[in-house]
Each structure stands twice: as structure tokens, then as C-alpha cells.
Length: 246
Length: 247
Image (cartoon, rainbow over all chains, first blue to last red; front, side, top):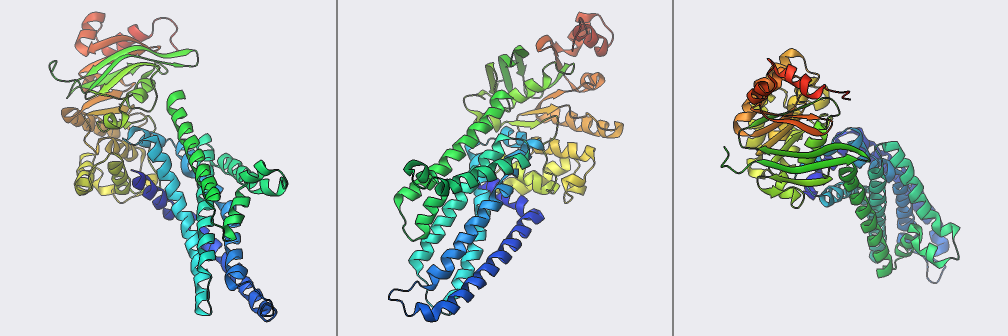
């Protein structure tokens, strides 16, 4: 049932211009940033070779590319997630799912996976660009994999957060703005609260930064997984309120 | 009929919205092959009843059994035997008719092997074959209503619940939808709500009349006419629901 709902979400996305425009525009921006970064790396290569332990192409080009992808995901995920439940509520299509033999858990997970798979597609396109560097040199596969893991987990967090805000309202725009506010807040928590350990640990940026530097720490992965689980559970509970409160 | 297991049984069903009692102690039993009309003025509790019977709204108290399965305790198993058309049909405008019916079929756990047959049969049954490749958003209201009914019957459920299926349609469309409901009544148990009383009289074996959330009559139309000593169902309806200042 999760697969059915996820497939439905993906079909709806690709059936509208939204998915294609998003993929096209993001790919354009990322390609431009990527080429800029490659250019800068080539310019610096002579100076870098003088260093004892110079940063490689993965550190200089690929990691910034994933950073840029992360920032773009932060901006577009709330817009893609806003329609997931809010639009169904607005168009009165939720009874189709509620009357079918499908649990709330399956509805929430189906919608979550539908969006996450789409976000992963954006990451895959960025990764293909990174792989093109292999034509001219060596990539640090460990660092690349850590970056991929970080961004895929970050995308899942943003999708879960967006889904929760979409479950709160019948107005997609309200869902999007609340979700942008919450994601940015959780992102910036790191900058605003430099010295406070606990607040620091709640920041999405802080955990993402650690993974993207190549440290695949179980604490960071646990943070991401707990984050996803919390917001998916809250979304399911909010959907249940529709049934209980009418 | 009485010895058969009822397709749908509701006992002492109640529901409040805040302090307002929307439905009070409703008892309902529907047997295979029966068509029951749910009648009442606007706000009498018809849609609330239907939403509860289909698992879209949690009952305040009482129990619902679909084919002997408790809807509250085992919702997924019970919903396999239910088909529901809400007042506003739950349709995805950007999908094609056949694509949408495929989705409805897989949500209702129609096995993959039987899906093509189920979709083709339902398209034919609801006279939708000619528009199967069109987008739902481009269809007329009558066709959209048919698609709504099609999604409710695609999995051949034991109980079909239709909330005002003919509201807002033109006379010709009403006639077609009514013929479809009459046909459904032969193979499924059907509950339908309507404001059009001759429709209820023509289609339903039994009627249940609600007034401000309370059942004022439940039984056969002929019994109601005898009881009220009126000539038409409309007169009985006005007598039963119009007393006092009904809202």
C-alpha cells in the first residue's frame, strides 16, 4: 500500500510541469555552480600542489556542490511538500484514502517516500555531475559517499517536516511558509546558538556539516532518523485528528 | 433475509460536535441485496452517519460491524467490504478515468492479475468506457459522479454507501444514475442519502428518517405510509421531520 501511494504521488508530480521545471531549474543552477567550482579548482591547482597535504577535487568541488544542493533542497522541499496533504484536504480527496483499507501509517509513509524519491532524483543528478570528474582524475569515494548519505538523510528530514506542516492545514501556501520557517529555523539554530550545546545539537546544519566533512557518526545518523520518525508520527497523529474531530 | 448475516450493522451510534449532538443512538441493519434510503433535512445527521459507517469519522459511542467485522477494532479488514461515495466525489482532476480507477482498485487491494478486468467491467457498468482516457477534470458533472460511483464499486464491496449521488445533476443524468443504483442494489447492499423523495420511494426497500440526529422512522416505505396515513412519502416526511422548528 505504501508503494501504491508513493507511486501515485510520483505520477502526480511527473504528470504536472512542477517536477520537470524543478528538475530543469535545479540542474541548471547546480551545473553553473559546479563549472564555476571546477574552474576555481583548476586555477588554484598550481598553488595547491605546493601544499604538504592539499585538498583534493572531491573536497574542493564535490563537497561544495552537495552544499549547494542542500541549500536548494531547503528552499524547494517545502514547496513540493505543501500539496501532499493540504491539497487533498482542500480538494476533498482524503475520503478516498480514509475509506480504503489503508492505515494512516501507510498513507503517511507512502506520501513521504513519494517525495523523498523525487528529492533523491535531484541528488542523483548532482552525483552524476560529480562522477563526470572521474574522466580527468580520482575521486575520494569515502568523502563522496559520506556527502551522499548526508544529503539523502537531510532530504528525508525536510520531506518529513514538510509533510507534517502539510498535515496541519487545508491551505498549501500556509503549509509551505510554515515549513520554510521551521526548516530555516532548524538550519540556522547552529549559527544563532554558537555556544549552547543542546541547541547546537538540534540544528540540521550542524549534523549535516559533520557528515559532509566525512565523519559518518552514528549520533548524527540517529539524529536524522529520530527527526524523520518524529515528524512522520506527528503527521499521522494529525491525520487521525481529522477522523476523530471531524 | 433475516437469517442471513447482515452486511452492515450499527448499534447505538452517537456523535457530538462540541456540545451539539449530531447523531443520537442510531441503530441500523442492512442485509445483502437491500437498498436503504437515508432521509432527513439538511443538518439532520445523514452525512455524519455515512462518514462514521465508512470509517471517515470516529463514532462518539456505539459499534459498527461490516460483514461481521468490527470497523473500529479492525478497520482495514472491514473497509475491504465497503465502498463510499462522499457528497463531494474524491477525484483527482489531473488523472485519466482509467488511471484513477486503477489507483482506486489497488488502494482497495484488487489483485494485480484481476485489475484490468475489474477496471474494464466497472467502466462498462458505469457507462464510462467512452471517456476512459479523458482527464477527470475535463468531464461533465454527470460523468464525474459516475467516476465517483465507479471508484466505490470497483472492488465489488458488500456494502456501497452513496451520499446524495444525484445532487446537482440534470434530469437525464439523474435517470441514468438511478438506473445504475437500481442495478447495484441487485448485487450489493446499498445505503443512499437523498433529498428527492420519489427517488427514495422508487429505489429503496427501506428508509431511515433522521430528524436532528434522532431516528424518527426506520422500516419499509409501505409501513411508513400506513403508519402516517398519508398518500405520499413526501407528506410522511414533512409530517415526521417538519414538526417544530427543524433547522
